[in-house]
Image (cartoon, rainbow over all chains, first blue to last red; front, top):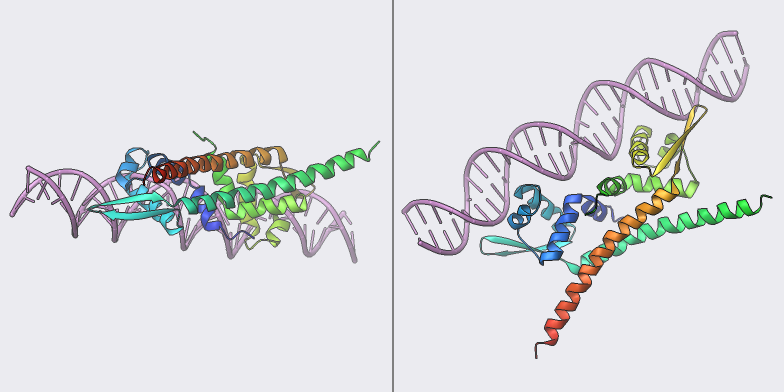
Length: 109
Length: 109
DNA sequence: ATGCGGTGCAACCGATGGTTGCGCATGGCG
DNA sequence: CGCCATGCGCAACCATCGGTTGCACCGCAT
């Protein structure tokens, strides 16, 4: 169950999450413009954009000597759904545990 | 925003997620029993239980020569809430983008 | 043509997930 | 009581990854 390990490891990195935030807020950007708004170097940002590209969360369009990245909205929406489904599964298990605990307590005078 | 980086990095690891799954399903377990149901060694599981313990998602209770781990349900519930809030933020941004795109399209004959 | 801004590639460093190997204690059993 | 085996922790080691620095390349403008 859950072969979305790539997705999690992609989105599990804090820098990549902030990268996605920036891309969503600004509607795209290049490695250098993004690195100016982050506490890491351009090369680090480029690597992160690479892994986000590999898992399909962003898409690069070369334009002149620049290389503009944009969020693949459909993929990100799908990703959010996957993540929240894991959370939902945990919540369901927690709820079951809670109900069992209550049942035990009810059966004790 | 989002100082929950520890939480994400804790839950971002696939082995740790499966660990939480097993602990929730079985209602607790030791490093060795858990390692038998995972494709990694007991030591690896012990390390993971260590980081999960450090962020408070699980709690260890020594019993005899064993060391039983259980999930801290309240903490896990809190964690799930944090994760889903990030997803909600992304969804909100995606929705805004979608509305803007629709507005632009409407204004084009 | 020359220079500058933006990329990409390569080497290197520290942290971390994973392994193996060992030593130690504790509990069951002859 | 003594022994053995089972469960644990510690240490060394390896691969991968996030991050940095340095350099070479390419496209555009003066």
